[in-house]
Structures are given as structure tokens and as C-alpha cells.
Image (tube, rainbow, N blue to C red; front, side, top):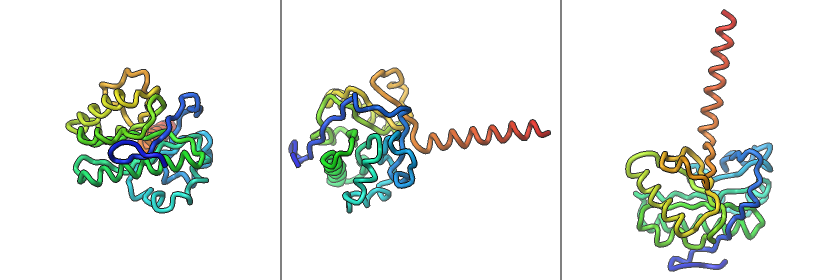
Length: 212
């Protein structure tokens, strides 16, 4: 495994925009990957609680064939919360890249997941990611206050260092990024579920009104 930078981050190859051929850009969280009935039309992601995919770190080979079924896989996302100790932030960022490099070596169509904590993390968090390709980010929990400021700072730094051709954003976009043509915004799994639940409730109300 080739290593890059002062923190020996594994090298992760870029994902070519031509490979992004999901028909509707639908996503499935890893904790639902085993039961997904149409993985070939979906992108699998790890924007879920760490404990739900810690098993992939412990036994990555067990899940390779499952992930290969998907149209593409966004790299793991072990947390880099700004209130975590710095060594843990670095360790989690390293773990994500180790798994991403392993996935690529096994033939999985891997979209690099880009994450950061605060400005201190800029010294290593982008290391190893080959510039110029499609990348993925998650905006969950980054809509207000200092979390939003850190998200936008990291986003700007990512553009400078990685120069992505497209950016898949899982979750709502901060309004500052609404008109960015490079961003492909996809609702998170729970956002889609909430929308379906709201539609079902509305349809039920309409049915009740007609029966009166």
C-alpha cells in the first residue's frame, strides 16, 4: 500500500466522472447493504454511526463481495468530530483511507470520501487523495453555527487541494453552496424516509376525507 505525506496516509485513486452511471443517484447506507435488492443501481455509503460499520474494519474481506454488487461505494467515514482528541481524529482519517485503498485493490468502484475536523486537520486530511476526480462529502449536522463554519472552511480547502470534478453531497446543502454546479446533492436515507412517511400520511388523510 503506497503511503503519502507526513502521516503516511494511504494513496486513494480518483474516481473518474465517466464511471458515475447510476440512473437516479440513489444511495443505501451500509447497515442496509445486505438487504438491498437492487444494489447495481445504488451507491453504498458509510454516513452512519461508527459502531454500525466497525465490523468492516475488523474483517474487511467479509464484506468485499457485498460491496462489489453496488454501482459504486463511497469510502468509510469513521468520525472526525472536532471535540475528539487529535490522535483519534488522525487515526480515524487514516482508517478510512486504509479501507478505501483496500476496496480499490479488490475492484470495488470507490468514490473517495473527504472529511475534515478543523483547520488543524488540513495538514493531513486531504493527503493521499488523488486530485481531479469525483469525491463525496456529508453535510449532516453542518447547517448552523461553528459546525457550519468548519464545514465551509474545509470545503474551500478541499477545492484548493483536491480540485474535484464533481462533488456528491449526502444531506442538505448550506445555502452558500446551493448554486454550485459541481455539487450533486442527494438526500440522506432518513431524509428520503421522512419524505415517504409524509407522503403516506398525506395520502391517508386524503383517503379519509373522500370517505366522509
